[in-house]
Length: 400
Image 1 (cartoon, rainbow, N blue to C red):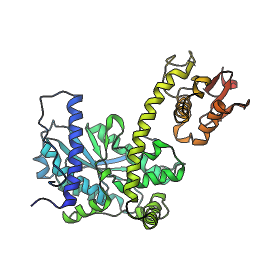
Image 2 (image 1 turned 180 degrees about the horizontal axis):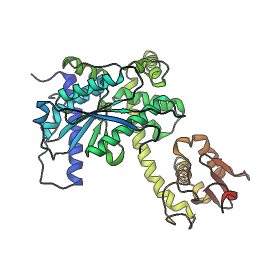
Image 3 (image 1 turned 180 degrees about the vertical axis):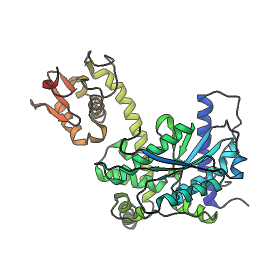
Image 4 (image 1 turned 60 degrees about the vertical axis):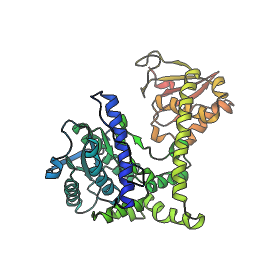
């Protein structure tokens, strides 16, 4: 008799991700041929200064962990908070990794936002070790105050800690427990902000430096992960912040999505997650088109900027000159992407560059009536000069 369907579903999702990780590892560093077992069918189955890592504790390996894969095998870590999603992910990783010749470890992050969080993090780390994962680390971070809100600050601190641990241990990948429900919430938040296609594409299955972060559960619902923990008798911790209406995502989860399901019927979560994938495919295609178009409209760059023509990055003094006639004939979606990229390369912070800024830049192309220069975030200026759109860091008076 096979495992419970929920357990089979999470294991299959993790197995597929581990195959991808192992294939990428073999491609990047050719080794003697490795045998990759075929996946079974479902039926058979950058560090913010405000968020430094404060402390890291390693949990001793259990005897079962020491009998795992060879010491030179690729290491895959799971980020586990102790909640149902990440606990289910940890259990599936512990089961699948040895069967593919991979090492499996874990890391839990203590944000220090609740009383007793340090003890809870240690408890989670011990549970990971009991599953057979090694190495296992509990990392404490300080969540700084930012103008982006507490949720974003905690997320920045968490990823900073995960990056540090992954780099230090040489991990091939870090698995994250985001589910299909999380994806639906992300898309709904993007819709509420009036975001573009890239934002509506939600979370990527693979992201981070060198594809470090992997999200196996984007096709698995939250109910399945909780059921998988229950049938395996795995204890889970429900973070009270996830039910606190003070947090936007919590309101989306407990109020907005249920209201949509009630008004529109079941299937809203699946539809939003499907929208994310379709939007991601569209955004990828538009980005590729934008890269080609950018080369045709770029007129000159400041030869005095570091790297000269073609230099990349937000370098003070970088000047971008774009041909307005060629910009005008581009489809709006492509043209606005070109404008956004040019502003960011001139020094505008991506997180502060909103749709209204891009729309005003676009009007310098499509509705030119002698408008004054635009002041963009990051002391970037955009101005129309004859048949060119000039985007530079600072105003002409700032230049020496």
